[in-house]
Amino acid sequence: MKHTITLLLLLLVNLSILSGQQKTTQLDKVADRFAAASLQNFKELLSIPNDAHYPKDIEKNVKWCEAQFGERGFRTERLSTPTVPLLLAERRSKGAEKTVLIYLQIDGQPVDKTRWFQKSPWTPTLKAQDEDGEWKAIPWEKLEGEIDPDWRIFARSASDAKGPVAMFLAALDAAKEQKIQPNYNIKIIMDFEEELGSPHLPPAVEQYREKLSSDMLIIFDGPRHISNEPTLTFGARGIATVTLTVHGPRVPQHSGHYGNYAPNPAVRLAQLIASMKDDDGRVTIPGFYDGIELDEATKAILAQVPDDEKEIQAAVGIAETDKVGSNYQEAIQYPSLNVRGMASAWIGGKVRTIVPATATAEIDIRLVPEVDPDRLIRLVADHIKSKGYLLIDREPTEEERLTHGRIAFMRSKISYQAFRTPFDAEVGLWLDRAMHSAFGKTPIKIRNSGGSIPISPFVTTLGIPAVTVPTVNRDNNQHSPNENVRLGNYFEGVRLFLAILGERL
Image (cartoon, rainbow, N blue to C red; front, side, top):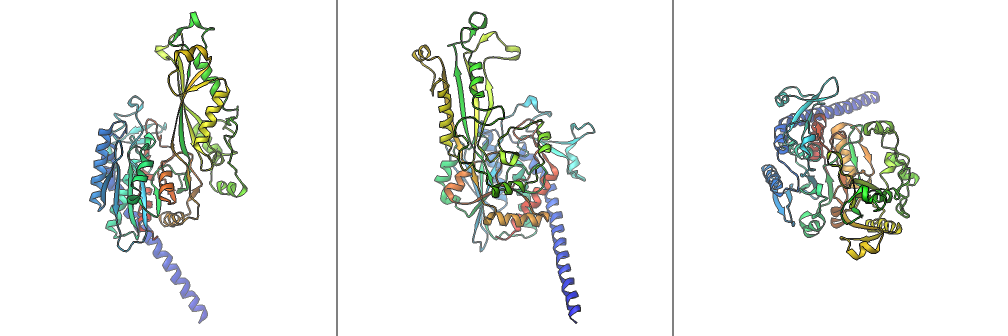
């Protein structure tokens, strides 16, 4: 009798598991159906130019988002800033005790149309890879038949970050059909100036803190781990920027007449930047890495990420790495000092035989929670002064030119601070369950990403934890020409967002 009862219990357990598997499969099919149906909507969104330098284009994006979320039962409200608004969309659930705030980015990086291999960055183009590894355009109508998950849609913001917006809208439609009702209220904040560094976001979060009040924040942005496995990211580095200009002669001078006589600011700028780092890429400015301690427990957390260092190097196209940390995950736990651009005089077909008047470097400093950004900027300024420079924040006067041998202009800006959320925070455990529902596996959990997103104002002002839910393929040419999203990632993103909508808090 006992043996019979045991067999019956095992049978019931197996039937329960099978039922759960069938339910998951059914929801996968539903998500895929709505993902496919949403691609035309996605195409429409990608066709709207979204460079935040052009407010009239941004207004078109704001109106599109108002219409889309309004159709899905959200009440929308524009939150005014000195430039373009933020857009808040809110939908309440009956009996909900908690509120989830979702961050979506709508704007994109500027474009150089000449470097895009298609008509326009805002003409979404479906492409497949040929035998030689080249991406070739295929008819959009192919999406009406069987879809190859390795096909890609090329357009500005396909991955960063209109892709997640379209995925989420498709998931909302799927949830409605399946009568999946979240047991939490949803607030969505849409940022239209993220690629400008979200300059007006911190004061806006303070001004509208009551409207934005919530229990947790999730960010639908960023690429998955390089393995393209389901990923959760629990933090991000912040960012500060520095413009550094070294002055030379008042105007460019003939290099024959004044070479060997008038100091060349391009050479001096190169020497100054080189003095900030050693041959292994480590910042040499005293105190720059103070406060960063990777203990054994932290290293164990970092080691859980299944990185293949050789694969990462091959993907980037480098044979060796800087020696800040012993691997990729360790490297991004430290603040960085990066030269993101340099300019002096003319090159190429416009080259001239002159000693330049100025040389400029644009620098970004990636921040981690352990550092004070004001202090890091001050350390950079002190280092420049230690090299004999008069450091100013304007054009030099004639008196300064004639009394100081070395003059440099420096301007700095702190865009936003870093943030980090513990793995065992409620939001992390909830998203982990949703990941299991969507993919049947534990996601890769990353302590913090190397990139920056403007989330710290929400974390610090609203006092809520934040976790990023990345969905897109890492090789998406984010910020570069020929940005794209892999359709397999798009479909899995809809599956995941549907699972999040159905996961109980």
